[in-house]
Amino acid sequence: MTAVENRQGFARRLASTTRCLVGTWVKIPAVEPVEILADAGFDFIVIDQEHAPLTLEFAYQATVVAQGAGMSVLVRVPDRSGGYLQRLLDTGVDGILVPRVTSVAEASAAVRQMLFSPGGDRGIGITSRAGRWGGLAREEYLRFGDQEVMRAVQLEERAAIEAVDDILAVPGLNGVFLGMGDLQLSSGLPQSDPSIQKLVDKLLSAAAARGVPAGTAVQTAEQAAAAADRGYRYVMVSNDTSVLRSAAAAVVADVRSRLSEGDNDGV
Image (cartoon, rainbow, N blue to C red):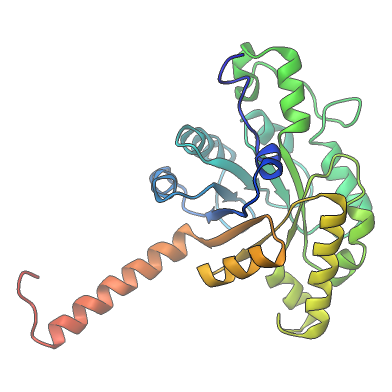
């Protein structure tokens, strides 16, 4: 078996580890930040096409760079229409997050587009990168696409989380993501509100019962640790733009502080 045939997709990676996997969002349309994030030690990145101007071409390039550096790659698509799902899968990504899913019907429609026939509607494209341009055995190409790729939906509204048991029962769905920011926005309640926390517990309980890994996004290491303790299996911490902004702001503040103290030797 070749190294390509023995590769481990994100779904199996989650299933085979006992620790929470840590990633971050990519919003800058350049591959240099991707390499930096890999060097920093992140397990995975999420290419954010919903809230950043990232194209299909960039997603392709970033996927090649990230996977070459040892990171898994997920893509959050712009919306739940499914317009680019098959093309993104053909680039060889390790998983996809479909945002704003509110019902069983929407979840089912999205998942079917990511599964090969007869279980779904994804067409075969073995001459794509996902098939190593025709070099991968057909059986391995089909197996990896159906068994190794994570197909996750984002639940971001109260009604969607109330229906989480039915949504997670959709055949082929093997990941779920809680969008806390939009849940707060749609409900008009803060994250600390007991009713919001009850919804979180409901989602995590349903995910654990069905063996579906649940993920979320946080801003700090402390929040990531708390999320892992609560039962999340993968967590995105901050994003490339925020990390850059914070580091830049810290450098500028430090320099200005030292200059104001007259300690400007070598500056």
